[in-house]
Amino acid sequence: MRKLSEQELDQIKKAISAKELTSAEILLEIYDHYVSHLEGFESSKFEEELFELEQKFSFRYCHALQSKFIKASKKEIFNLQWSIFKTYFTWPRFLATALILVFYFLFWMDVSNKTKVQLLIIPIVAIVILSAWIYYQSFKKVSKIKQMIASPKGIQSSLLASIMMQLSLITSSFNLMILLPKVFDVPNYMESSYFIAGTLLLFFIYVSYSLTLFEAWKLKTKSSLI
Image (cartoon, rainbow, N blue to C red; front, side, top):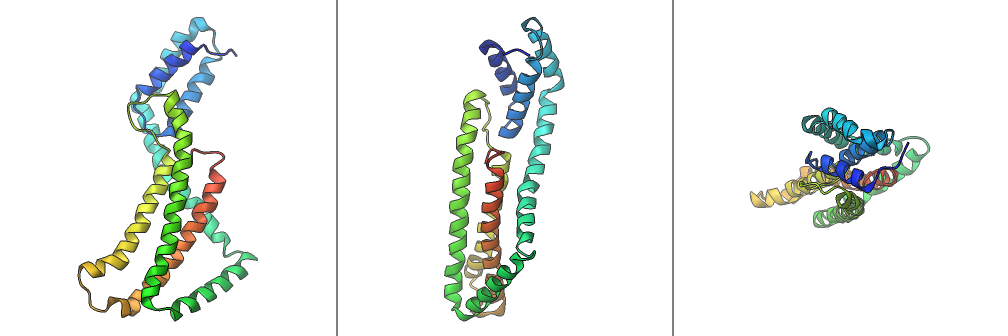
């Protein structure tokens, strides 16, 4: 095992950069694989072994790896949040959850419909702030990779992309529930039972999402690029 020279590391970086990958996780994984593999050979065999790696990790193969990882990352955060959410209904946390739900239901039915809309904004703002913080933390981590490997394509964490996609779904659901009836001028929509049930459900979803996202981020931040 030897330490690669700066010139050799630059060759590795240029070879990986030419693959035009956008997933920071895949870029880092391929780079680490190249380095660890080439450290096991003498400098005289560097060019030969690098060529062999390039044949295996072709442009097409790397993009297939990236596509597979992006699909998996979309499920990873959601599955982690879902597993955290289910713990809220396990003993003894179930008692606290049940009490909160009862209080939440009674409080929600007691406030005016206008207040319901205003209350919906609170967890959305919390989700936006949390997502922005995760984006900032990810940006700092990925910036180091960008400095190391100058890819011609934009690089970001695939896990972060999944979180940003979920954020867009959250804001879209609010728009559909609150703004769409206004656009189509639906009369007295805020007085309907559908509106009350819908806002009740959305508030529960938003609060649950913000709590599980925070817990999921705490679990992943030490071992990932978010």
